[in-house]
Length: 417
Image 1 (cartoon, rainbow, N blue to C red):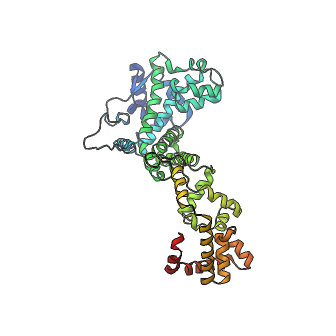
Image 2: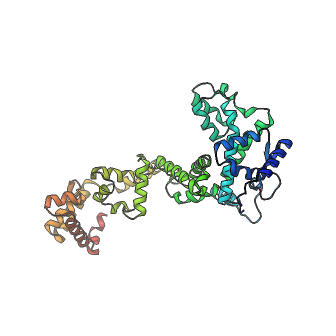
Image 3: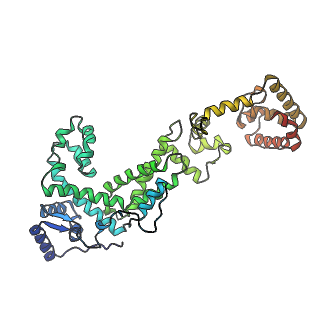
């Protein structure tokens, strides 16, 4: 639904609207919006409007143009087919909600700012520490969810502080102000849940359940609503995208792999892969290039690439009764070679290398792949021993492997494979 930015009232209309609101004790949000255009220009004007509307209860009214009248459908819309998958069910529900345009986002942001300003006198009158009041104003006054947070802030019994909060007040005006902020914030969040679905879809292949990603993204979206400053003139979805992306990537970093790598390193690795500077295949990674990209040593680059490898739980179920560990054990037993077979294979490999490769090529293959009990070496290490460049060693390695890839040689070694 397209929203039009309301024009501010002239002085006569403003006085008339305020007098009517004070006389009846009620005002609709559509009547409030033109007042907020001027009131939100400064803190002093906002405080004056709060004082003018003290005791006035806000309500959405019955106007079809009112943003708060758009709510979740109570039942599945006709023609909408839900899947048994939780993600599809959730996504289909969110897509039925109308979205806010730029004017609608700024209108909701101004209403939130006004609702927070109405809560401030009640929070300032509590026994909470001064540094905790702004935090509570942003998060909303909800006694049911604030108990643990207040205990953490104060370090004492939360009941004493909860008793001073307006959550359980019997005053209709106080209860209205408390519910007003919660309703506005919830509505603002609901209208932007589609942002989280769209952004988390790009991270579905990172090994974290998609519903966990959505949950983390939704929490970040709530925080973005609380921190959004409409005066910057940007779309809320642009601002919220940063919060959601940071939360999702931190969750992936904390839960991906056995070795935890700092989030900024993970972000840089993903960016370098997108730009094509860092190969996606581990076999194609050159440690010297990685060390230059991350400004570190080759040993540190090797450890960094080790942390990026995939891992599997040995207790992961494979079939009805088997686990990954049991299958590996069975495979090792089935592929175990006797000492005699190993000696025969080693002797035959030496014969093939001596028959088809030069002495230099044979030495490179032996050192590169650790044949005959030799420790595997890198291209740089072999190049230093032979006093040639690492690129020349790589070229000779490719040439030697090409010689050994003949079908006739593979047939000769098939009995050992």
